Image 1 (cartoon, rainbow, N blue to C red):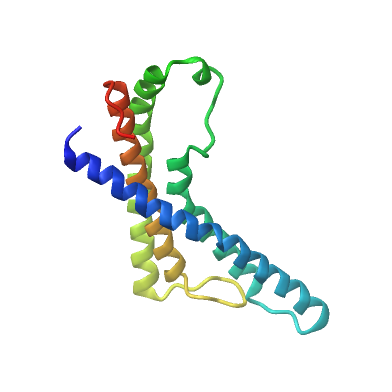
Image 2: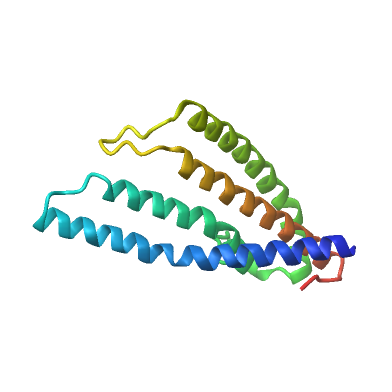
Length: 169
């Protein structure tokens, strides 16, 4: 594989590793928010923002951790036949099927950018009683989809190299 592809894979892996490790700690933030929600409902006046903020934390956790999950192979895979195949056969099949994922993520990113533009342009707010602006979570959505798309492309190159008999890592 050319050096440019090797560098691309190396840097995408590094960026997604950092974002994935940061995203792991968002679970603690979400737990703290939900704990505060429980305390405030029982002892103080209930807060309007806690449930929706916990949802935003979970969305951020999923979206920013997606690329890292793909990198480490922790994503869900149909293993009916796959586990019986050789590494080279797996790489060939993955190289073909990942093209569908790249197509899907491109469409998702296109829609996410459109939705983010709308949220910024019109000051879109959530329909809840708290009514937070939607632009920040939509920006995070686009960043997460972009990181996932970059990781999928890096995985494509890894699988292609493995199928050719010259693994990248």
